[in-house]
Amino acid sequence: MTLGPFHFLIMVEMAVLTWMFSILYINGKKVGAFFLFFISNAFVLAMPFAFLISPGFYTLLVPGLTVATAVNVVLAVLLLPRLEPVLKK
Image (cartoon, rainbow, N blue to C red; front, side, top):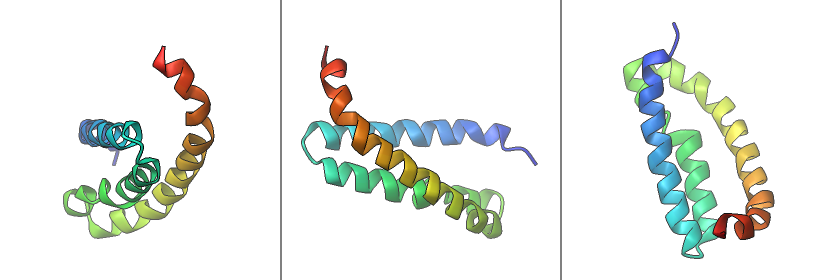
């Protein structure tokens, strides 16, 4: 079963999460922003799939999302300070 129709839900969730992250990050709450991103992306945003598909699908999805989110957070911690001057222009 492909997740094609569910990608719209994922898109909306990620847009809201990105907006929330940016608000915290811009206001100087960088640790909180990264914590919010990690918890939300790894665990919370996948939760609708427990109800839409099955709890087993959610259980299988979480480990991969957790690893991928950790990699994304590490890359963001390393790259965002270097990109800030470019993004402010």
